[in-house]
Length: 103
Image (cartoon, rainbow, N blue to C red):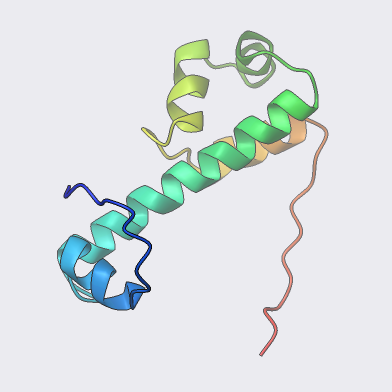
């Protein structure tokens, strides 16, 4: 990954992303997007867990997993299966809502 310095210049970030991660649809760009989604999803789950005042150990116990696995999910290192994702959501007393994006 290239180091970026904030020189306060306005940039077209499509060009920056293309340079850093490849053009849209390329293997490199798809991999970078998947890693970003994994990290972002992990952070959402972590924020939800912390918001419910539940430790990683408690959450792991609730879903029959380990603290290490919860940590890996929250740090975007691992992506849980759909079933595990819903077990986590349920264990935190939350729900998933899917809505149509605005056009």
